[in-house]
Length: 398
Image 1 (cartoon, helix red, strand yellow):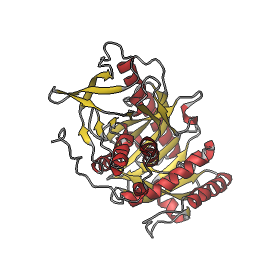
Image 2 (cartoon, rainbow, N blue to C red; image 1 turned 135 degrees about the vertical axis):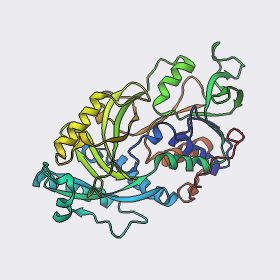
Image 3 (cartoon, one colour; image 1 turned 120 degrees about the vertical axis):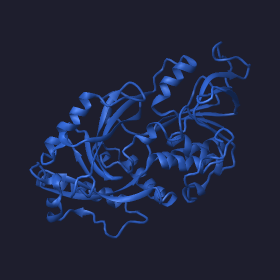
Image 4 (tube, rainbow, N blue to C red; image 1 turned 45 degrees about the horizontal axis):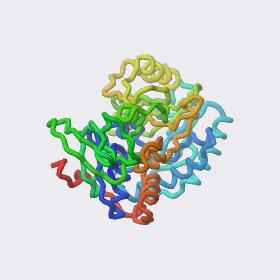
């Protein structure tokens, strides 16, 4: 098996195949975990907003996977009590009911710290937080979620496989079983060979595989169009932005707020900074810079909801735009589900496409795909801890 794309899905599939004794290669035009897998909100979560969109089944699947990730990589994950503030008593009751269901369905929390408390936040703690001052919120309710380092988690997955690794390798051509190249016309039903160019040295090599899996995230449509003149778009792309400020004294807990626009705004103290971000705007490419309009929208939201803090005077130490792959559908992207689809590429019988998906459910999805591809169930996928840090053993990476 050859996996094109070394993000969270590609790395997870490499581990799944290795657990089943299947030889595989992992190819990426950049570094492992270097694309959209490092631009997430860095949460392994059920998706509390799915209570509002009705995606309860997807939410409960995510909650089950939270616990699995904590068992597989406890050095990459830690629990947090997120505060969701409310403006009115009615909104507070609604939050307590919804959060109660969320935490009840997600009550499996291995390694939960005893000092973290869920439910109604005591008034004195809430008022001590500078984000509560002069704003519209009267109180808050705390719920549980799991935080992680997303890029490092992706690299641990790759390191836990026996895959041949080809990072910084660009696919420049394909051949089918007739020996025809893509710059001619591929007519046979199977791809058998890819030509790889090392972007660091300019050298080329060929790679042959029986099966190919494209785990290209938001770059899927672009790659299929370039390689095979594929006219059919399969994805909608949605981006959220993150700004990283210096830490603010008293902002100890992460906050999650539903804005009037139905977008989510979050403030998360982590890694010595205060991360502020929001979701969703539709974009057309897999890597988009933060736009002036999007930055202004986030500042406006911060000033409206947390007016006591001088947001525009606080230096921004880093900013990023995280692009999400959504399976194509009509309607606004903020209403689209983060569900994934495993698709057989109709042009080639031995090619699978991974469409959509998210960080939290990547392992479960790739467990399912590996079982389908090999016919082998693997209970160890949920129990064998990942390896830390070291890159995959491969000729290409040494």
